[in-house]
Image (cartoon, rainbow, N blue to C red; front, side):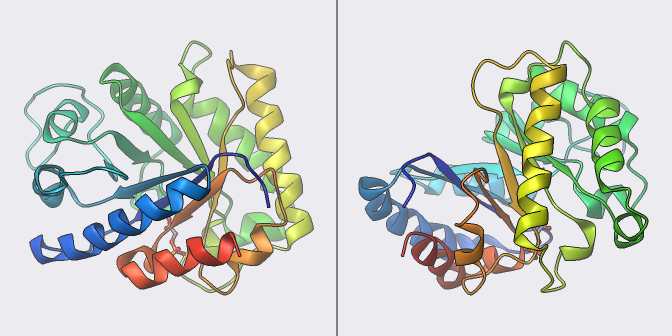
Length: 252
Ligand code: PGA
């Protein structure tokens, strides 16, 4: 089994209330044990309504906390109902998911995502930047060109990409129980790493995660691709048992 650092990131989406802290607590306890054995980083991205509360409740922190989106303006402003990266940082977020396909489906363009990335970088948030093709784009053989476009149009040359974790999430795989073929996935992960290395100033390794229907049954398959640096886990991260089983099975 690999000794490289692996990320296990939960994307809670629109889920949870104050009582859901018990999920965070259980995962935190478990990760303490796992951290002694493996190089692992666990991050839970929770709703904005919970980040401050969870941050205060977590006394011993073996896991990190993040959020799932922000407004494109960095500070304060006349944007009813919106929350900026500054406000999220102040509330205790260390990580932020940006460019998720569920937000893209509601009209987020690469240009808008670029502004959000910039504002989050200015707040020194670590970014989990999601990219991925739809089923029709895949069928039309456009996967690589779409990924290229999403990267180039959302990241300016001077952005600090060392603060960004890339999450490859094929849209057709999110919440569907469908996952890519392992050989295809390996090629795509390598392609993303090369694209970033070619076009941006990278200090260390480019980190690329996979997301889309990851569960405790299929996680073993992904462990055969050493280039995958970790996982963005949606549905299964809303249960401590499911999330913990994924990590257990990965290292089995
Ligand atoms: P899923 O979601 O694991 O429920 O497919 C992944 C995601 O949307 O990040």
